[in-house]
Length: 371
Ligand code: KG4
Ligand code: ZN
Image: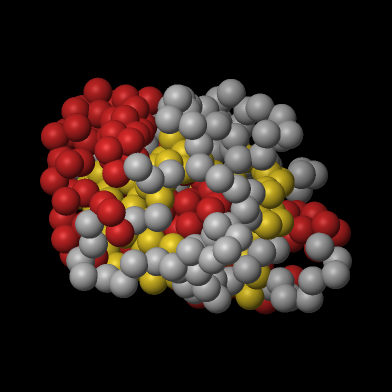
């Protein structure tokens, strides 16, 4: 059994143990994480059940299927996470749960479960913004403290965020249409490759000639840090249709051309974001770009980001893939960090399909499919 956390006179735990729950997209996850008095994080358990097989026949995440799958598996996964951590609900200092943004049926499943545990165990509930979970992950994985620049590229999100402090985020850019992972998935679907499409496109691109199709690099040279991938998607479709019956080499060449254009687009946007970040944080000399989300697993993108970092005096940090993609450890950690700066949420807190990390940023109603 784990040692119970000790509470200081200020009421803050010297060591906090938090149960995290994540159900906002197509991963059902429960985790137990501790944060020690020095602010170091430790993952005691992090159980992730991917629903990829359920959604694969449809070539994308089906919200109703996702919500039902969360409902079927969540209780068991929480029990498993608690067992692996060697903890009981009474040992916890808080329950942290993704309350948005995401597919509302799934978010509701996690939030209602978290509320029930919080009420039954008499523990505070922290409603966590899923994006904040991604944004604070480097604190858990490598003890990195803000400020740092964050590129989040997943199936539902494509954002550049200045992480100024815990709870203080400036969104520098977002997609105005498709998310980057979505663009990879749609390219794969168009070319008859498997789901999820990102890894398939990357594999095919390895034997392709990127220069054969001269796809446009979206937004290149434009001011600001917003992304757009729908034009590239259209160009890919037109090339595929024009080529007629596609040979394996055609598919490889299209994938290579698409991946190169996508990486160049990201490089251009990230370079602008670095300038904005430097202007905002002129006093801090440790410049770090953190890349997270499923697309950060792409090796061509990583190489591109290494290049941009080298050119602009930044260091690239990419959390391990298991903590870069959706997981509950990042939600538990965000809860543990929030505990240091605020009290828990009321049990009446609502699930939110849309929940910008930076409430001051202009809304982008078509940004990504999943949030
Ligand atoms: O963060 P994630 O696991 O889940 C959410 O979207 O929330 O990201 C999944 C996305 C999918 O679109 C998938 O195709 C993409 O990340 N992805 C990749 C690669 N691995 C996963 N995209 C490009 N290259 C990869 N190697
Ligand atoms: Zn995510």
